[in-house]
Length: 326
Image (cartoon, rainbow, N blue to C red; front, top):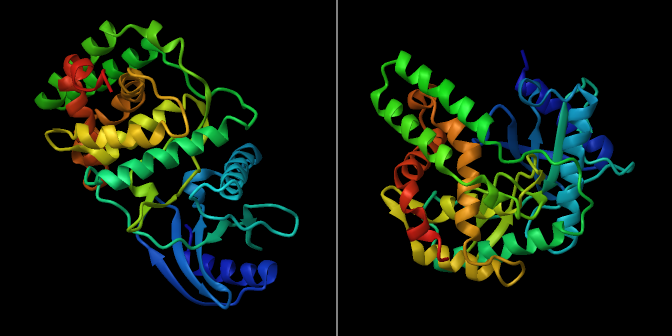
């Protein structure tokens, strides 16, 4: 059992020892799953601190620790290249993930002021800037040597998971979910997987949704939380950002999708049809996770993703007409 107040004391002490910063206040932020985040007030200005909860990240395993250290170093590289993302503070040894005397891991970054957008509510100017920022990020990441590819479209694997979800829905007599999963299975069965063979492979953020954005009056103050960064298909970020910013219950705001793509194309390529392909790939990844019996018992964030997947499932055959030309 992790005692958070004790961990906080450890981190405050460790930050003083490693960075010479005296912490005068720690305001806990109510965001994220298991990991604990704070806004620290220090004698060198405000800072963001995240404690990696051992029940989520298992950082006692060296391989998992190296993976997070890599994503933090890539975030710092992006920051130094001019991307709107927080600076990550390294120790004198150049390490970004810090360990307290009791073996707890945390990261410290500069504090970025901004507001987290309500999903689906981003306006034209913010979507243009989100497109620019995402395109810039992908452009910069093209220069990073590739690691092992983490994911590829797999029809058989997707169908197997959806079938398992369907059997669970039937067992729980969830008629709404049963109908959705039957439709989802037909969607994947009829999808031409050859269309993914031309997808460019590269590094991506892989969690580019509303909670990981900070907005100011001008545009995107910062993209945050790069923990899930990996090598797959960067266009997945496009689909996640578009749905998070432009989809509201009942439909997608095509004008704001246009705005995002206009901004994106200032830095990276996004030919017509790429968005449709990206959304289809995102569906392969997320439908198996969100179209599950357990999610219908959740509240908050999971409900948003469930609603998106419900809409995509129902509108699947109309997607080429809706967004295929963008």
